Image (cartoon, rainbow, N blue to C red; front, side, top):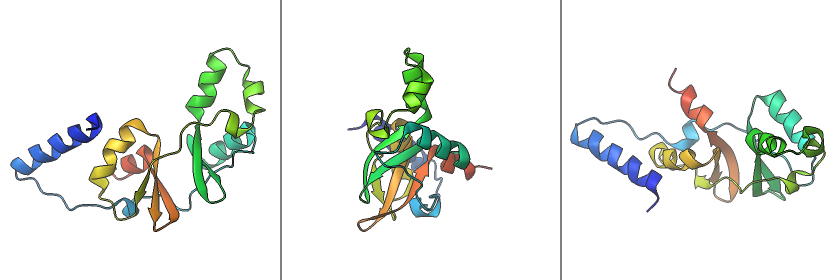
Length: 146
């Protein structure tokens, strides 16, 4: 069992024993639409420009309508911190530095079940049928707690 999932399970069990009930929110209530993404063949510089313009710290990488990876500020800055010049990293293709794709969940998935995924992923893609309809990030969760 995933440790993150077991923690979430224990939390909900404790809340249930305490008599605290909350309506089950679904991920599609909080997602950002449309999904802003890059392709594997774009330059890292283009991905950084897009992240900066949109205020994002990570982006999914799509190819032919399919999620094939992800790219984040952290990945880019980690490469620079390991001695690569930032200019050379910015000149690479996204495919040369991309990380694993974000997990995908159905649009009607209860939000509670996705919180564990967000502990170890920058974001979660949300699909309705075969189509990705949005993305849920940690930032989206925090926006609900104003």
